[in-house]
Image 1 (cartoon, one colour):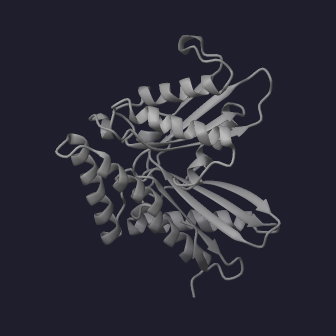
Image 2 (tube, rainbow, N blue to C red; image 1 turned 60 degrees about the horizontal axis):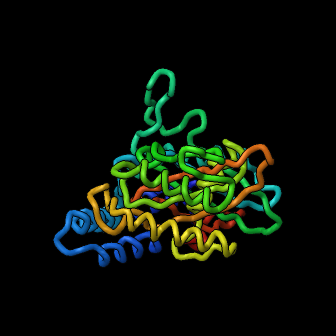
Length: 293
């Protein structure tokens, strides 16, 4: 019988070592779209071999196992304090097992205690709902791709970006342009239009919880997502900035309410090693009942 601790450790293992099927399909599709014999094709072949090796050996897809971000949709009454304590212990044990690298340091001293736990690490986001379901999603967000995230306050005169979807398009593509060769592309964008400076970035990351092959229910945003992908891939930046047809694997955009004085566009960038997994867990036993991706 698996406990909640066992289940969380397994979620961490799968997230670190096994790329989601929707992301792998996108990578394989982009490989077919690159010209034979190019550096872009070679880079994507290496990425695909990396994916296979990590899964077979149950080892991290990337040496940077990233920030540990839990998203928990839970029934009313769940003991969130106890859950967080269990999640922290799962992170510590997963680190000992090698599923996570010793990757979290004190920001003032630079000290690494080897546990991946400390202030703000791991990071947990709880969302209560009236359903009895307990769904736990995990994202491992690498530092390289985190470094090339960007936030814009519209209007952005230098880019000719006004407070409309055309202006949003301009700044999102500027973020892609500024990130070229960095962030371990091909990448995926998570975007929030609106919110404030803090909530905009937080909301943009939740877009990575969507499947790459889903369709945005807001027609205007669905069209903008596809336009961003097409235009970005026409820029010729390519995998790792080596040139080619695949700069982005996906773009997911959401909108949050804002105050009239502000119009932020927050862009989070995810590397090709898109580590996201989740499971439905029995609230009583703690066992995984099904996988979400």
